[in-house]
Image (cartoon, rainbow, N blue to C red):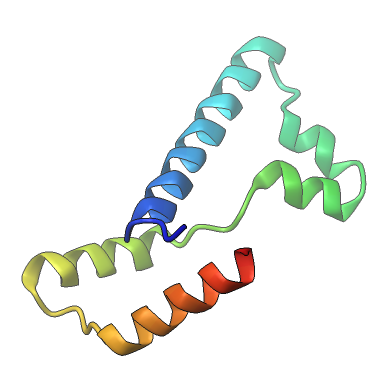
Length: 91
């Protein structure tokens, strides 16, 4: 099934918000010890998993601004090809 455009982005943004909220709650609950600092003392993979995917908020803001102003380049053929490739690999 092909997901609607922006569905994955919305899910990623919501996941990022949930992680940030969890970090705030963890700090409030445990005082100075957070999940991130506990993960930092373990393996690099555990630390990366605790931090989540890197998000470049400046890049996101620039893209949102370009979309809002109508200056964001869109290549429909490339988008369609990628959507088909993703759908075929999921099957």
